[in-house]
Picture 1 (cartoon, one colour):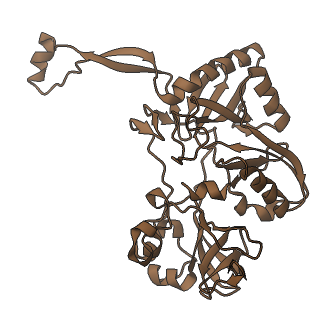
Picture 2: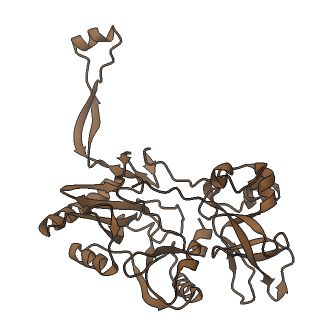
Picture 3: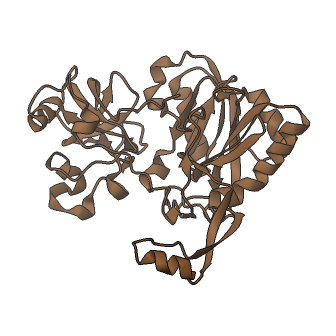
Length: 390
């Protein structure tokens, strides 16, 4: 099952321009832009765009290369200290003390560029090009094959099984048009940690990070020996003997260290209940898990543990189970799910956003993930204030 590569750059249409105010006085240099295709709202220079204009939109959480077309984002007015981006050129939420008339501060989430500006940069039509690639947009992720990843001790591994989908939630701003209200949704806290999956299938089992399958047992170098006489002789002819001494032990990779106790319980549960295949999706969080690196991460000072948010039927390709089945497995295994925020029926986008913002006002977290009952629909609603501080 091949993962689809998501595009970060799109050609969208300006739907509306909203005046911004400081106190009761209207801002004279910037305005709020709404797009026809997605729910993101972006602050832009006043009168740079008109309603109906085509613009090039770059999604949040992707990174901008340091190239001339993005110079004003990396160093506004030539000053890198005023950069509008996060670490590694990441597009993050940008908070403004202006408001749209209600007195509430607003956030710009994403980037738009005038269509003609991009055509000039790429020297030609945009319709036949992969703009993500042409503009050099990338999603930075710390490598998982080095000594550290997201603050965790890791020992590499192999590519995760192809029948386990990657655990990336879609931003709800890309999905508003597909939601039919009223809709009942369950919301759980989006933990700021590292994705982890444990699985059991036909007497095989394992632990995965977002990208990699982690070996449960490794051969660790514990010393070195002297070459034998025969090895010494062969070395004259170019032979290079391996003089390292190995010891077989449980992998001390942090995903295995913290995932293995849960995996042992899952294997026991599956065998006792004649379950052929199941996968549990969670977030490794706490003091040993860096996550996004946000200093405001509420789990950063807690002991490292795993909070779970999904259960898959893994008899063939992984397929999401519904909310009742998820809760049942959590109860049977006595595992801690991600904190439940609400299960409610929502009548509009404004209703859902208001409910999440109400929660964010009293609990600073990365966001809330919402799902319908059968988990066929899921999306993340990011906490703009938290994202702006990354």
